[in-house]
Image (cartoon, rainbow, N blue to C red; front, top):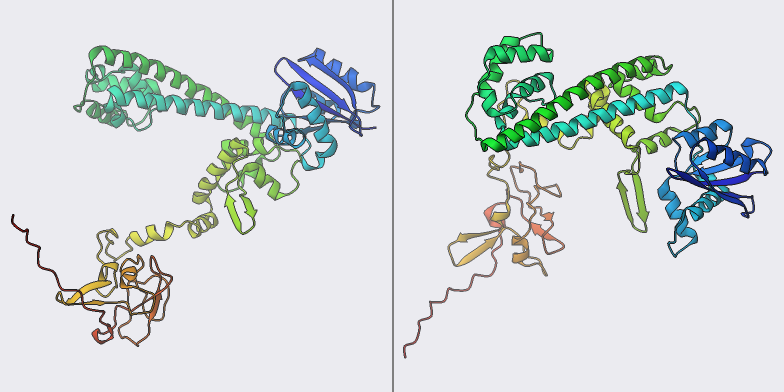
Length: 489
């Protein structure tokens, strides 16, 4: 007989609830975290089942020592997203009451009735688990270094803008070596070229020492704004501490990178992943670590895309339908796939063609790029329109002095010249619809072109090549009244 175990886990204790197939509660208990609690859990379920495979567990996480021990014992473990558990709670209770004991029963009920809608936790190999730990640790250190680099940049902008002009990459060994020796503008101006060369050599540079030292020395000698002496000294102390921490992070990132490369090369899928365009050792290790190597974890390719967050979601209700990005995803895997996609642009011609075909700004960039033997085009805002193009300012023009006004729009009942004058759309050339092209036909065949107006459903606009005889005069403008004279007392 199958039994259903709901396990609401916490840091120092876990709440259990055991149900039979009909939903009746068989046992409830709170166990401590650790080996003693796992022994109590096994003793609790042993009184109701004969084999470990008859125990179906619902829990809100699939990583950690507790879920790993249950999977190793042979239990069927279903890791349910906490958001899904919260929505399932509202399905049965509207009071929004919550407790650890009720959550354990909720998880047991969920796997009893709806486990077919959730994915069973599949264990990965030990080598894959080791690669995952190294890949995530390496990525965490990279993110930490970037945060500290941003803080260092923000501090330098407050008192030492010359350093930002001298160093482009603030976590580079050259930058850390020079700023560690002279963290303030006053100390940096006193540095000689030989001292900068010695600092660069200690930082690990072996080539172009003299040229790079001269460039740094020239940038540090430029005039700049200065902060007060006490404030500059305080900023210098903070900068020196940050540069030391960033230097230590660089060393540890290199150590983890070497260890990760060694473990990844031992995996049987490493050679296959490295053949894909755009994937290097570190990026391929991250992709493999987040996907896992369990053979039956994903039903199809769409399940992998959903897990990575690259497949969009559709919200359709009635006549409305919206396609949005999938925000509930594995953020580490999405970050790796995002970098993979852009690295593939330089390694795969097919990826570049596909990207350019779906990039809305690719054609504009191509038009602005001068070809061989062609003159570079000017900016659209500075490039005048052709003289024969109908513009919005041409809709109403004084063609015969102040007495008669002619409009390029033909008269139609229900459409006023004011609505046509305010139309934001230019006229289309003969035989076309929609917006106009830069060129117009050389002769007018008497046809009318339909163009939308701002406040009316339709209007009829003459093409820009229409002769003057085709312009229909409107009613003459009213005569101007003389200015009213003020009456005297």
